[in-house]
Image 1 (cartoon, rainbow, N blue to C red):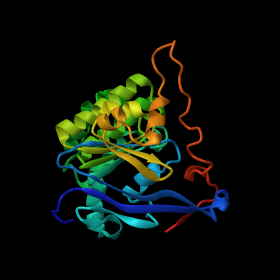
Image 2: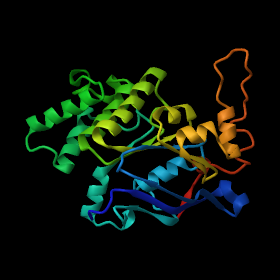
Image 3: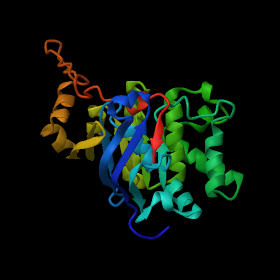
Image 4: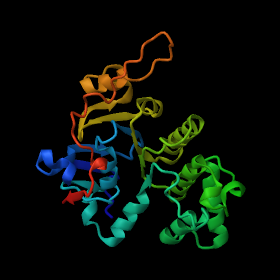
Length: 297
């Protein structure tokens, strides 16, 4: 990998799917439509990618992680297209760009103890020369996410809570010390108290360990909590972008305004404007709803 700036540059990416549900659109559905943005590690920051379900957020996450090649456009890291990296360069990319996914129940193999996610990373990236050194690093990473090693190590996934599972994945991120975290709806299945703890850990990672995060969410309140920049998506396109305070205080796009108006007001006498998902999609099929999807690459 070259020594150029550690930026992720998403350049004009488009992702087209084909399936029976998209017949009205000529058999094709554009999940992501000519999207561009940059993520920087110097200085480290948090960028929230916000939009309703089916807007293309998770598709962008998969493309950045190298799990799905876009139909058009490119994602570059340190100036190189991630889909043209050598094996050695891709190994570096995998270490420096780490995912945290939505489902804390589906990320673990139920037949293995949770310790395995740490030891696999240690072996793959040669993070320790002895088992004792490796165990010390694991324990340090668990403490960094407010978990006691004796509460989670040597346990199976079903023996720990969903919040603990998500924090274990953050501990794995801490172990690897990446430049970027791609967090795809990581708190949507957690209760309120654990959500705040999770978000505080992400902020801690930014401030202490210089990790930048792409935080994907449908919740404007959590985007406001973590601060930084915001990208608002609708129907596969970024319709508004900027500093989160500026965008949420003075939204210019009608979709952002409607998202804000749909947030419940903590006043029992104030009527909640239930507009969030009404008439915005305009009957366009969602990528996650298409049966027998074929990716057009």
